Image (cartoon, rainbow, N blue to C red; front, top):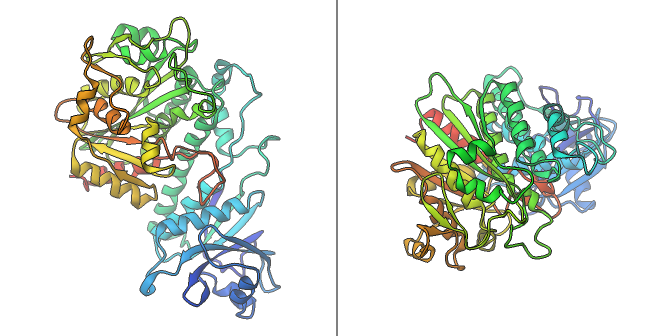
Length: 527
């Protein structure tokens, strides 16, 4: 992964391949952001005018390169847009800094070292710039030749994961990621600054690990190899891991997970990854949907809807990354991740529409649509997580196309059995820069899931399908346990051009929200 250093040098004196400054849209034209003073001085105070001549406006997402004058040690100046100038002299918000840093890191791909002279007023700003730069610098590196069996790939899971996260050389990867970010104004001897940037490094590394997993071809990542990835990380970070294979799942009565995975050659897994702290007073359970490939099963997806279905394990990847992040940060809270892993494939042994599955909870479910499989694996995992009596459960899933229709491609929906908890998660997601929106749980929609042959069916009304899925999951939450459901179907996989610190492909959606939730819980802010 891209290296990060804190520097007290000025933008004029630090030797680097490029120096990054911020610019913004002011009421009378382009405005140079704090941190650019020494660079402007090297341009005889005419930098803003030069940038405007080159077409720069300060708009978010904008990047303008120009050669540096002799007064700078760096040969290139990169001006990145921060959007509008803050009102009443306020500071630039964290998300504006993250996105600008991400744009800079992407623009400087292939560069060895860049000095970031963006406006940093305190440790929080330093953390935001660091996080944005490290996430923006991400490059996916394929691990092996196409067609390599997943089991053989899994044997090299630990080494492969490390190589991918570090942006190892690859003929297929194009330019290498930016080698080093030197954060100016970072105060390396200040404990708050160091803590903020160390946190950014830890979270970015795990979020980028999640991106790697999401981007992996489905012939390389299946339930077994995914479980191997988790086992390698658990060994590295001293975490406890338990993997239930198909025999254990069948014996344990996990009818939802087995029902989804029984049509695939690669059998399902349920992985429990546990981080504990000796002084923890509260516990969280994160449950992730891990469909490593979703064909729709017998209810086969139409043409044009299969190509990105390797991303249907994004929820499990987010949970995996969040638990390891909690361990790296040493948070004073117990966090358990449950990864419900399966392939949803059509075959002679696959679950059929009309089949009835007996879930781990003992409830029976009539499967009316095998492409509504995520709720089936999550239901078993939520029931099992409930048995450990956590203070709260949060599930994360690329669950419904209906949520994408409701909220678009960049916003995930939040449903919960507790309004205050739903509000808290929404506020947390906005704080860390992940777009979300609270969604209702209308009880009248439950009626549509009535079944004549089972306790309930896995489908309900077509309208409000995202809400129906959440109501289904709520039926499997243990009594008295606070629960929330994050439907990340929109933002989990980005098919368009990169923006800010978001790359094309897997995004790592919800990782930062889960980590901040764990931090807030550890500090007692959630009660």
